[in-house]
Image (cartoon, rainbow, N blue to C red; front, side, top):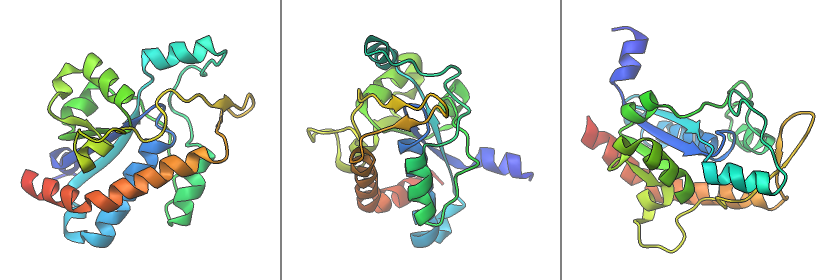
Amino acid sequence: MTDTRRDRDKQSILFVCCGNRERSVIAENLLRQRLKDDYPQLSDMVRIRSAGIFPKTYLKHARDHGIIFEYPYFNKAPNVYAIEYLAKKGVDISSYRSRQIDENMVNEAGLILAVDRLIRDEIIQIYPQSLGRILTFKEFVHGPDQPDLDIGDPMKLPDIDKKTGAWIWPDEYPGTYINDIEKCLWNSMAKFAEYIQDKE
């Protein structure tokens, strides 16, 4: 069996955020690392990916505040926050380029984890076949009844560096969403292991 065919046959988990340059990239790589460290027998049984989407309401919100995201929105390097954070974990993502979610990704993924409700709802609107397979990451970890189901602020707007296109956040903001991702992974590894084993 070729490597490409083998990848297609694996169970797939897809993380999605806005732009695929920070939150979903961090979650993807941390989960992959944690599986290798804590559940090495499962790490080759699952394909973990990430992608991005720009919700229409978010783009309008940005335009209303004078912020225009450079088009095309994807095929861009991760933001420095993700690069530096993952480098400290021994993971180099400097060559990664952001990807836009598409129908093939949605149809392939057995589990789609959106970082916030705005992303989740936009995916469901565009790809109704995702229903039953899509949750926010916090829903997957804690269930749907907690008051805060978002990692980061779904409507928060960055400043954009005109030379590099990098998104610039207030100093404290990346730490808050990174902390949320870490907590979600810490509390969900047994669930991920159970999910992967049940799907085999």
